[in-house]
Image (cartoon, rainbow, N blue to C red):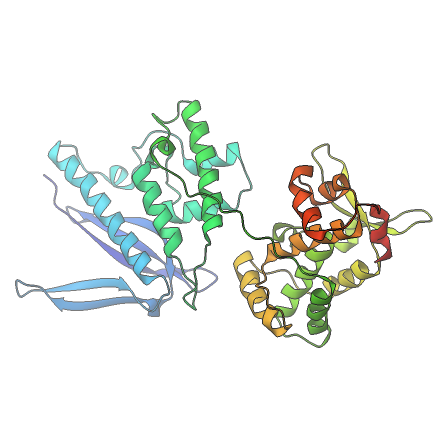
Length: 383
């Protein structure tokens, strides 16, 4: 029977570009150590190793995360990983199975990797890094069972930023679990897993949020902040937010926005903006009026947009600075564009095309605007 010990270590031999070090779990079996990587990365001051007196009079080293907004979550996750690995090793001892470096690392596992399969089914999803960050690169499809789903949901709900605010809202969690359910459902159909874990797990429900949009006076108030010398990084976020208000593009499209390649001139007509490729490989285009032209000129002076979480934090600060009572987020820009199209009288089919969504989805903007749908898309050129 092999003797083993497990304990966490801050791997301070190599740091990443953000000066963070990885937390690893040292598994020592018969005086040979194998290192297991966790998804957690910390600054040295966020890791504590303290010698404490054990009940038997000996000293032991207590290792834990400190001075980190998610310290409780990370410490609990590290303890869980150690506990799970201890159960694996204990079971192997009970069955007289040799404990090797390969078995410790899980190299003997069979089946499909979640990361690989997820990218085959639905690639370029923002949920994949979030799932892998919790489950690790070695996460297998068969590892995802109802107990794993409960831990993942609790982890996402408990995440907070430096100010103690939740990093992930309820609907983001719902969307993540919807995506997970699609992947696991497909895996079950292809017989890659014995059963779909969502057959025994109720995924978080989606709550249709109240649609909040900005009217012209409110957008002008934000533009005035930009023109009056709003400090970075708020200025960059405000500019891209206004771009979203005038074009309907999502935050995920902000970084790809390039005026030099996306603007074309029509013979004898206005400049047009090519927004994105449709399913039929054609372009979605819209005319560039004075308002949009001014915003595009500001984009040329701005840096690259920040992450979704950072932009939403910036917008929470920008709203009160502009005298707005509405709580802003990146998606409020898209709602503002939908409301703009409805209030100008664009046909529903045109608005749906510009926003790359179904006609039924844009109905709400026409209900909210209370305008008669009489005008045509060409009115955007007069803005």
